[in-house]
Amino acid sequence: MEQTSIQQIMKRILASMLAVSAFAVISTFTASGDDLESLSGKWLLKKKSPEGQAITQSIEIKKDKFTFEIKNSDSKTVLYAEGSIKLEKLGAFKSVKFFNIKAGESASQTESVDEERQSIYQLGDGTLTVASNFDAVRDDKPNVDVYTKAGN
Image (cartoon, rainbow, N blue to C red; front, side, top):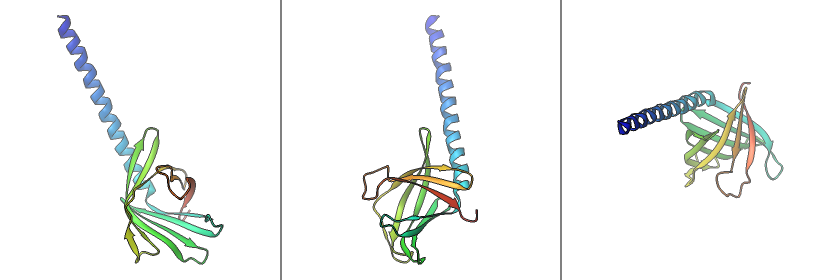
């Protein structure tokens, strides 16, 4: 009789754990779907390059694709990149993974980049804060940029 009670308790615990896990997975996908919609559009940032030159960075997100561009003060593109994105949850953080990347000096001069990048992001009221270059050791130092939604 005690064996049956223990088995029933274990079954209830397992069923509860499965229900909680399913809810967590569904919540993650819902949050990611909502964020993907909120991330859609063009985001801009004006700042200084590491050399002290004025630049404008833009990232445009459409569905699960991105384009990234850096223009100098003469509005000439100095870096162009495009590829795919995937939103993921990393504990308490939201992350965006950039992959299938092609990059070059312009949209017509790109080459495949054998690298993925993952950044932590936070959406605000018309802002997108991105923490980059923390996922791997690179020549570029880790940084945090705050983009503004184009049109705001």
